[in-house]
Length: 99
Image (cartoon, rainbow, N blue to C red; front, side, top):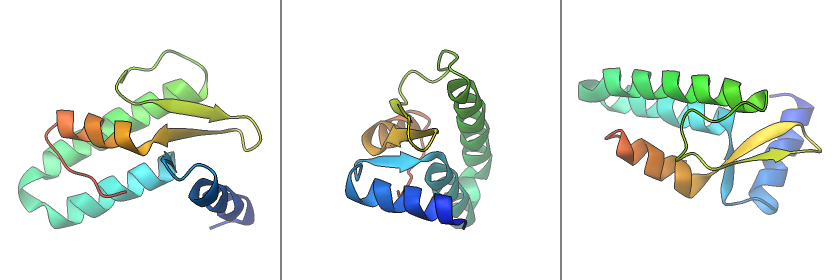
């Protein structure tokens, strides 16, 4: 992990503890894929939907997943997601994530 990413993660842990980075969401989905052999297709579809949505949001386009509440952080030029919205979004697709 680079220094910039480390500082960003530390910032999330302190000031924005109820938010998570896109990388944290991806890691949570990847970890869930390892542990849920019977739902791997659902998790891969979820990962694909998340990546598509994140790409759209990064370039200030409308979100394709309205349940995902996000915030554009001006200092780090990153998009963060509210953890509660990520959990609700995943649950809507029938999967559980641990962030």
